[in-house]
Amino acid sequence: MSASLIDGKAFAAGLRGRLGAATAQLKAAHGFVPGLAVVLVGHDPASEVYVRNKGIAAREVGFHALEFKLPADASEDQVLARVAALNNDRDVHGILVQFPVPKQVRQEAILDALNPAKDVDGLTATNAGLLVAGRDGLVSCTPQGCMMLIADQRADISGLHAVVVGRSILVGKPMATLLTNANATVTLAHSRTRDLAAVCRSADILVAAVGRPDMVRGDWVKPGAIVIDVGMNRIALPDGKTKLVGDVAFGEAKEIAAAITPVPGGVGPMTIACLLRNTLIAACRQRGVAVPAGI
Ligand code: NDP
Image (cartoon, rainbow, N blue to C red; front, side):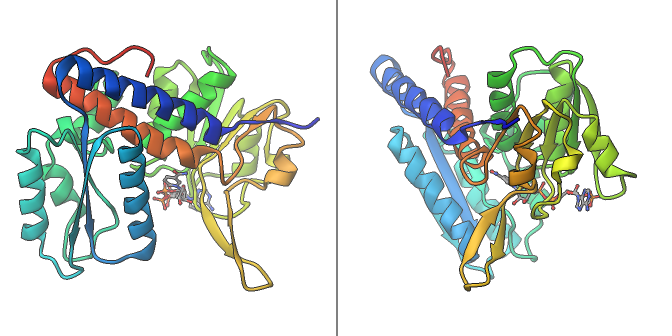
């Protein structure tokens, strides 16, 4: 058996198209467009690429996009002052501080300063709490994107066993909560889990969010499972080039699973599309208008 490929790139392109149409609709009907501000502290090359890509994606759907760069030696107070200014800017509906930040700046201090209504990464304690309570907030982008891909495969996951490997605040924990809220029976596995292979083998839905190349082998996958690979690992090849691979040994797992996300082109594109979606939702809530249908 060979799994069907879950094409996150195409799914995300469709979502971005709908967001573009919704933005045009908001502008025509209400005279505003969603505004996204991204703050980068320091010069981490990967973060610079992420920030640039987020700005490009936001402009492509018609958003007002701002980028703020602070030096690597910026103090915590300087970063907090930038966050406070953006909290008070009526044209900025979403704020994203690119993590990781240099060590003199506490991530928690930034998240605690951020207006939860503008927390489009869904990382503040307020939004994390709303998610656990099953109430409307802003949902962390990567897990939100994974849920859309899963729902596209199987509309009702009620009673299925979902295993999430990885318990980070960014991915694993919100992912497990979203699956729980969708009535799956959820196991949240991590580095202390015993016999991880057996735990994974019992999953109807398997989400790997670890950061270890090809850790999940083909014989860890239950025949017919939906496999979502969040991992993004850059590995060196013998010829000196590098390659992006996931946490799942794709070649093996695709022979066993019913459906699987590739890396790249699976979860990655959904993360940025969901960031844009959160920004549009945040903008509508802040302006007191209904979120256009279909996004
Ligand atoms: P973190 O490093 O924050 O968390 C990794 C998790 O994996 C931890 O909970 C850790 O367990 C667990 N873990 C580590 N080793 C093992 C092991 N041997 N067995 C079982 N569990 C293990 O990573 P993130 O959640 O931020 O990211 C995970 C991966 O997803 C990375 O590759 C990252 O690049 C990628 N990513 C991709 C995104 C996308 O858009 N596609 C977005 C965000 C992340 P413990 O808690 O016990 O230490």
